[in-house]
Length: 121
Image (cartoon, rainbow, N blue to C red; front, side, top):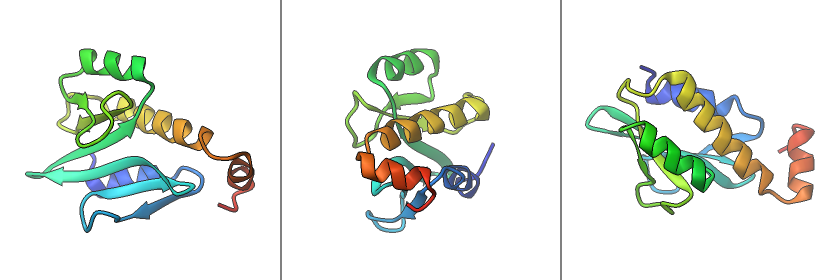
């Protein structure tokens, strides 16, 4: 299983991704264009990642995986929290991260998306 740092590194591979700590030292918040797309925390040594998700897909993921729950302290319709306990394959979690990033990046203004595409964000 990947560590918190390894998940953060994967998030940072996305164009324009930035680390932020608006809530203190934990959780680590990953943002694009000033909007969060992932929250990465550790509870009792277990990594948890909260990710934005289309509502229908969010429900399906919760039904498919015991480790996927409605977003903790987030809008439960649009966010899932994934417990990284080995039951959800890492590639699937990476796909969830990609989906979250894409949703948030698409919500940026046209000007922000242009800057992001040019790598200047």
